[in-house]
Length: 234
Ligand code: ADP
Ligand code: MG
Image 1 (tube, helix red, strand yellow):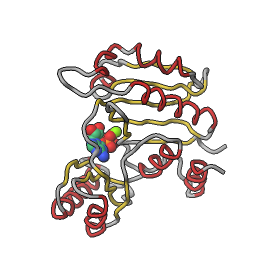
Image 2 (image 1 turned 135 degrees about the vertical axis):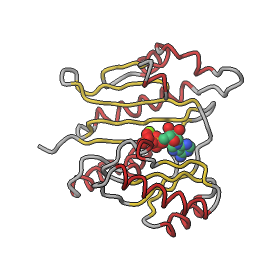
Image 3 (image 1 turned 180 degrees about the horizontal axis):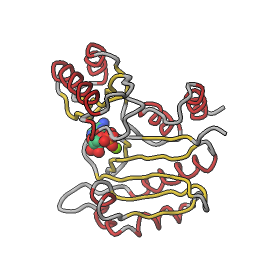
Image 4 (image 1 turned 135 degrees about the horizontal axis):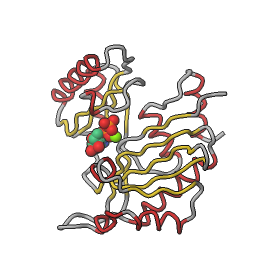
């Protein structure tokens, strides 16, 4: 059994179909996609201790199986510089989440390193009732949400497909760097597309993957958020 299928198995045994951010990041790192170091804290004290272990500055996020859009719940704080800030952020995140989602089960908060800014990319997969798994590539933020500037292919894809998907988005030129911004490494992004495609092709239990955003750099890329949904068990 692969490491990814062990994680999927344990999620199923707990009667869940949505992986936590930590589990989803573990799965994508087993397939070779870079991500932030992400640990679960169950108290303010533990959040402070884990921040020390990870090294400041850190990011804190709400960890709840019932909260998908963490920012909307006041559940993401980036760039916390010391233990006092971490403790305060931890309390604020939990209070905000309880207020917005009164019934939500809260596991605690995740503590993660701050990834340096890069070009924001989105890679996702979902299942089309006709075609089966489909993979999506787009630029993050307004590009996907407002301009719907995305490319789709049916899984599995070949290297040539990955390369075409990236080139066909309207914002392609932005990946080459603009106004002194660092460019994105296209072969690294092609590689992530291929790895994700290959993984969903071989893992029918996966219903959806959402890597949103991935920060792309000149020599690498890091997924700072990950969500994976499993098929309902038949
Ligand atoms: P949401 O559930 O709202 O999608 P995210 O985990 O994507 O929450 O976090 C929201 C935003 O915070 C991201 O789009 C990104 O800009 C920033 N962010 C999240 N995690 C990190 C991180 N580890 N390092 C740097 N920035 C981050
Ligand atoms: Mg996100």
